[in-house]
Image (tube, rainbow, N blue to C red; front, top):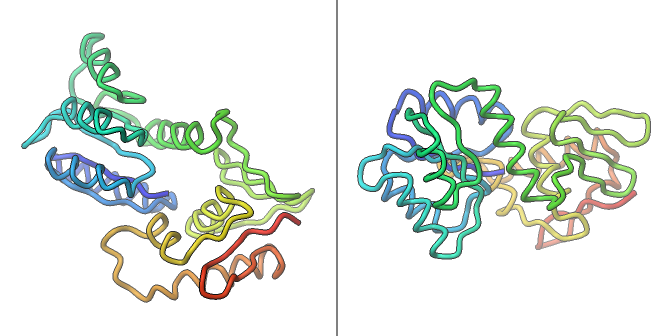
Amino acid sequence: MRLLIVEDEKRLAVSLAKGLTAEGFAVDVVHDGLEGLHRAGEGRYDLVVLDIMLPGMNGYRVCAALRAAGHDVPILMLTAKDGEYDEAEGLDTGADDYLTKPFSYVVLVARVRALLRRRSTGSGSPVLAVGTLRMDTAARRVHRGEEEFFLTAKEFAVLEQLALRAGQVVSKAEILEHVWDFAYDGDPNIVEVYISTLRRKLGAASIRTVRGAGYRLEAL
């Protein structure tokens, strides 16, 4: 999943980005409300972590502008303020959740995962099922029957992209966009490396290559 952090406290933004990257997310960071609105408006992100007190344009206005333009990307608002009025204003502008600073990093990750699950499954269920394969996106565990597969954060993230679109072909570019961050300028064949690793762990027939198009997770 690809996340955008819009936060002008640079130390906090970098810390959050490092932590979320370690959790397997692709993370981009901007420090200005106008730039955040521009980036989020491109429709490239699965979730936006949005501070309220920002230069250029505050978080309330960014959120309202995105919703007015028809963007339904989940938005988790951050603020140093507290009080019912601030929370109500944030939610009224279209935010999906609200977190007051200082906050626990563990709570932030839990809120992010909950919003992503809600969007991807529609039912709020944390489990993605593809044939006999089960991905618990909350516990970060993968099973087929009684067998459990132990995946790294990046392996899990690649498999999740395929599972979210089970039965469909997912291109290398789409996987790169959602699993690696915007600044990644390494070898795009890194995707093939992770696909190969997943095949070794899950079985060669689990992921089919569609020549010239991408990869498809098979229901086995």
